[in-house]
Amino acid sequence: MEPLTFEDYMSRCVIDEDHPGLLFLWDPEALKIFADAANRIEVLTQPQWVTTPPGMMTDISFQEDVINRLALAGGGAFGRVLIAPNDLAQFGNVITLAGQMELHPFVQAAMQAVPKIACLAYTAIVTDRENIAGTPARRIAPDASLGLRQGLVQVVGSQTGHSEQDRRVNAVG
Image (cartoon, rainbow, N blue to C red; front, side, top):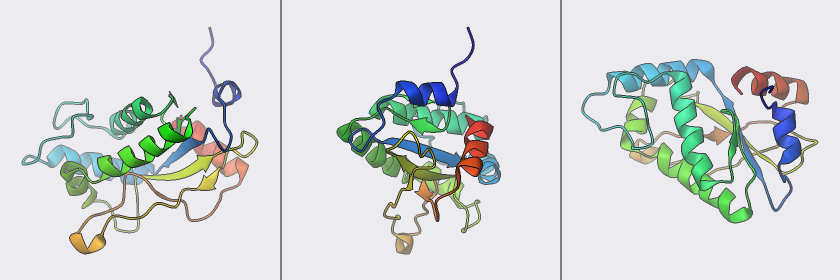
């Protein structure tokens, strides 16, 4: 049996305004920096949703841990790039949980190594299967005056075209 493709998964999901998906576009460079920094943290306990032993995190293991945890609040996941299908309550839970995960002291400590202009993942809300680029997710950033960094998920600055989106989805999915 052949592995399920992104297109096959999307065709089986209910995706509309009442059943939005959350698409992740991961930044591989920022993830590597984050994982390296996380592996050097000794004084803080990893979040319970991180499954790798301390000092063993990789960029891929972190992506999988994030998606697997968020998928429990949502309706499922495809690879490391999509949380869907979701009803509106599930989608709200996914967004809330992502914010909580981002604010964990361990995540915040590792984010300090990531350049301030970078984030670990850009997100887009998918409400139409024909537009897999989705709509940029406009989240409220953590309070910078408290030294908090937005990094687990971040606002997409502008909508990307399908070819760029397809390249990113295929590269990390």
